Image 1: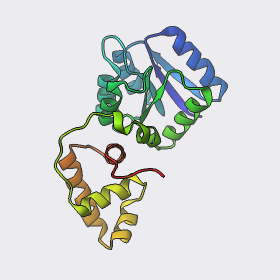
Image 2 (image 1 turned 90 degrees about the vertical axis):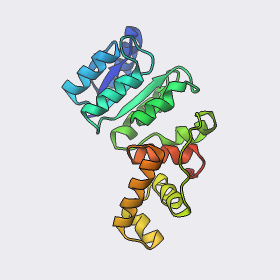
Image 3 (image 1 turned 180 degrees about the vertical axis):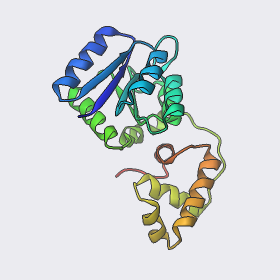
Length: 205
């Protein structure tokens, strides 16, 4: 049973989500009406997935996500937003959120997103179409080998698979990934994959 924490400042929206999720066999273990409550509840209950509204009082969804992931880097957060072009969405993903879903999404899309994220996936395909809308950032240019490693990572290959494909050692792959993260100011593989898709280095076709 997937355990979900709801964080949204609109009580009726939370009640609707609770009813839907529980009808699908999921368990809502808490409801937060603002970002500070979301951080506290996440630390106390350790949910499988957190549905986090971007715009909330006291502490917005981006900052709440940052705080939650500082406490538990393995937390799985899905951002909820009214607008696909919300400029905070990418900031939230950079902070470590696994992706986003629109508030007007249908029930099937929401359940699928929660199930995938609970299983450890990131909602990368959403960012493939969003790529052109995301803000461009200055970054150090990657060399050809680093670009290839980043591309393979974004396509879902493990370090071992990347090493086999490029005929290098796993240690070399790990070292190159560390250098890539430093150059691009990223913290983990999910952020690197999202970056690669955003910049057109990799796609999910």
